[in-house]
Image (cartoon, rainbow, N blue to C red; front, side, top):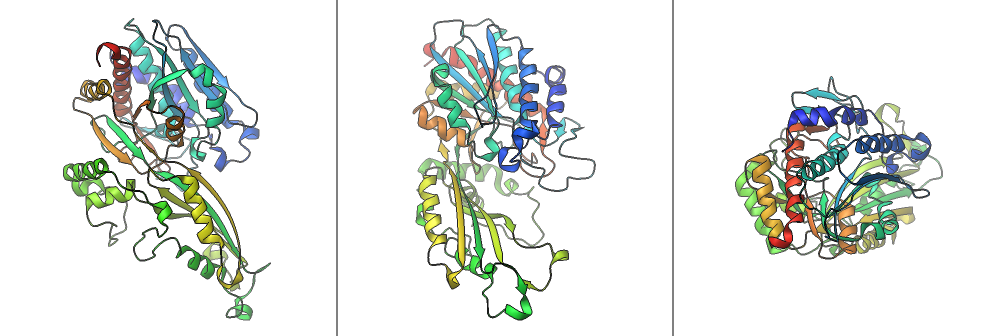
Length: 467
């Protein structure tokens, strides 16, 4: 029987709400994560819940490698001779709160309003373990033959999944022959159908510091004599981004846009029009980038962009004095097209920002990259299964879209298992506010995604006779 909202409330909601109270920040945001023990608390909470599920012949393991974040693994043994493995993926680490949440809401104090839960991590990606195991429970209750299922819930995704490859190496024999991957950490344009992600952008993160003094000096004494570190930084950034248009100037960060992506952008633009951006909290009078809706979709999904996501060495206005500062640090986030090699992109950025520095200022740089991903051609059985799953779970057909974010795991698995079939989907729809304030999980959507996944898993089990 399909899962209902009362079922989800009975079986999962209490544990999900407890998870929401845990400040289990990803290692990039908590360098003392091991000492704080919050990631461990979250993984043990979810493991305890998993052990209570009705999954037949199964086991729950918390896998730990020295110096790495823990990993939750649930393995369901096959009940037939199918040697394939179906892997379901999610993560339990969280982004920080970001800022002050709206009145009545807080990042680690879950609040329910109607059929929506507000708290950090509930949609990105705390719901995933519940959706994966409840979908498996639904499938196994039918008694139908099925292959082996492995659910992996990692704890470093929000840091770019630095620990995941080590676990994939460690578990390679256990994982066996992966033929289908279901990723539950993606987005949706609406909550009324199953949205399947066809590509994700990559990421190049750059931390750059420009130094001109060993300590700050009174601006009345040295301005006009010592160059401003901010001005030098500004000149360096002009090497990589056109300040007038936002276009990235390094060709190594661009990739060709395939025809199917162009067609998909136009299809989505025709269906949704300006409503795609209507909910953005844009200040009155701000003009959106791009020539039209389709152009903005391509900007968001297939073109490189730069965002200055953090700055250091600059005091708050109320603390500022008339001082020429010694240094300025900027944290830059470059989103890369799905088909761009992040290592080559990082190398190009290091060359552009680190050589021939204006005024002889000292520059220090660190970079980190994560590749994007584009789905392989969808097998006929899976194409039919996606359409049927969306009809069964949502009452209307599936839809396909590219995403502007990054899920490094998909690129890692794609390299390891060329040709594996992927289903990347999720609940991050309008107002879900992943990484922002007031993160929200739409409960009916979570239930429908769970039901859709159950249908897809069932279709995989019978794929040999329905190719």
